[in-house]
Image (cartoon, rainbow, N blue to C red; front, side, top):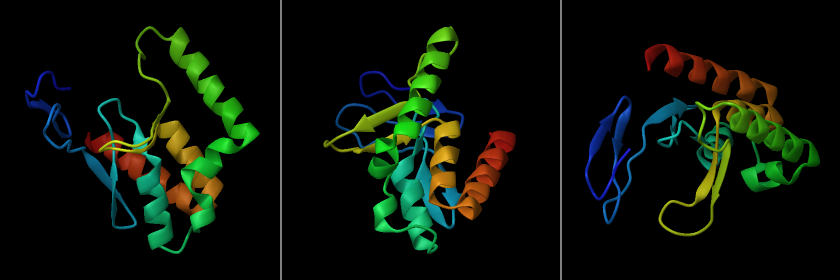
Length: 138
């Protein structure tokens, strides 16, 4: 976490605020760096890039299409309701940033795994394995 342009070391990386470029900690999925924000949300656009790079997804499987599904909308609402009940969890399970320097779709680990499953079961296993490894190492 950073305040007023100060750099703070977080367990997995550095975050910059203000005029400095943000650098996110990453995990590697299919050789592609997937960013994780300061709240632990995975960048679903990066996951899509990793799936496309490995031939596991098409352009029609972008996060924006995934989020339009009625079933996924219900899933996100359930995640939000659970987060509101927990005093320890203050971050939202889904964050969509349109425009600016850091656009993208960011989702908690469970939503990232759900997105990976929507793309392809084999990709879900890969993302799950990576998240498990990063949990053990982090």
